[in-house]
Image 1 (spheres, rainbow, N blue to C red):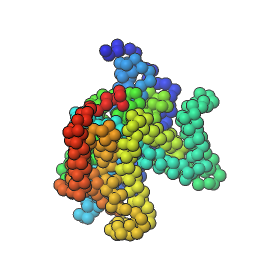
Image 2: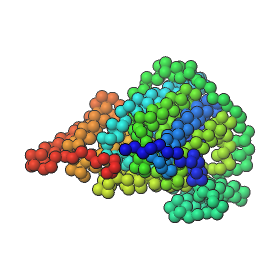
Image 3: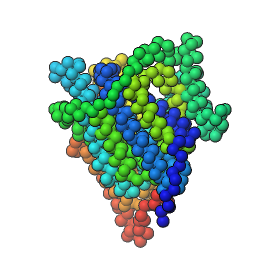
Image 4: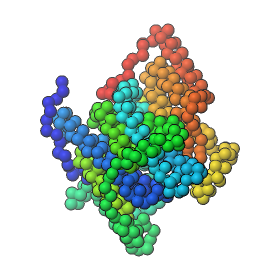
Amino acid sequence: MEKATTRPQPLFVPEDLDGFFGLAVDNLIQFLLVMLLCGAVLGFPAELIASRVLPGAAMSLLAGNLFYAWQAQKLSAREGRTDVTALPYGINTVSLFAYVFLVMLPVKLAALDGGASPERAAEVAWQIGLAACLVSGIIESLGSLVAERIRRATPRAALLATLAGIAISFIAIDFAVRTFERPMLAILPLAVILATYFGKAKLPFRIPGGAWAVGLGATMAWILAGLGQPSPVSMAGLSEAAHAVSFHLPLPVIGDVIAGFSHPLFLRFFVPVMLPMGLFNVLGSLQNIESAEAAGDSYPTLPSLLVNGLGSILAATFGSCFPTTIYIGHPGWKALGARSGYSILNGLLFTVLALFGLTALISALVPIEAGMAIVLWVGVVITAQAFTATPARHAPAVAIGLFPAIAAWGVLILGQAVGAATHGDAAAASAVYADPGAFAMAGMHLPGLIALSQGFMLSGIVWSAASAELIDQRFGRAALWMIGGAALALFGFIHSGHLTAAGAVTDIGLFIGGKQALGYALASVFFALLFLGRRRAGAEPETAPATRAEE
């Protein structure tokens, strides 16, 4: 019987500040990446970034964060609990890089080759980026209608394993490397985070550990700058950022969105990039909803994903090329004690930053290094959750599910290394990738690394799910997962792709992944034979999957 509705938890609690600092740092990184990549890589005018792209992103962040805070309050009242944490929400990092390097940059280069001026080429890239963002939002919204069925049919280990792979590689390891790149600045904030979040240490003045970490990190950065040591802050940088402050009113850009859809270059990237990225965004959000349920907060899938998709549509409508998504990190923010207020504060902060052009100023005053320890900690917690929130017997399935994400991180590092070695020369980088024999001589299996990395969010689920079913001796269900893998491989959604100077490119088309599909099909036949053999031997029939409560 459902509990009677009670008063919801307080809208703000002191621990919301910890969650706010962590989520704000993560989203600030995305804002800075948007500014950097749109300007340096795509050649967008500074005015376009400041007056259209960032305000559009802020509109989606505000709407989504307010909804998910309201959703948490509603769940709190319905269940009579005061420990409900809102789903985190932010810019989708994977889509950010994919749309910059696999859509907008190729569009810009194609427009330049066609005789367009640099200014016109950048405008076309932005307009098609808007269309790509809108496509992602539409796919996410439609995916909300079927996502719950997918979620219930998939072992929890499979949904959490890929998320853990992203957390440990793209989040935790990256920030750990950056911590030891600037040890005098970043190790102290990390120590504060570990002591307060792991050790539950209480610091003076009842100030949350996250605030202490950010404050001490920023102080160390300015002390190092004052002593003439390498530091991410400087008075010159602060002065330059201050001069860029100005008000930008968000305005719809419907005409530019239509122009993006109607441009001939749009169709070139719809199937190979936009369609799979939209599906990946649905999958990623689904995994984060599962992660929240594993942490104790069960949110309905349909409205959560629907608003997630509408947020991306809103972003495109107001000028942002980058989808927003239900964000990774819920169990980390919940462990901090954050509830609903951290989400509201996050949405309000980035609305103010974008509308008044304050993003660069905040970064110049409080460097990313001052708060990245919080995000590192969240990556660790998410990875740990994949093992602790699933049945202990499924731990090997979780471990297998980490491999594709780690391979994807390896491909990213390889691309950065080749780019550095060739000094950004695209032709030289392409020549390096064209000789896999050189990698083999160095002991690196480049074709396998690329194959394992491509479509990692999907292949990680397939292998982790099949492994969980095999652990439970459900050979028939494992065979079905292999059939799914064969279908995905056949069309190139997993394991098919190649490296370019701009990054990894997925190859999608009929029979693109015929070899991989055959391998999956053979595995499916093998598991099916095991299933039939058990049936003939009179073994117990395969049981239904464990319920979420059992998991």
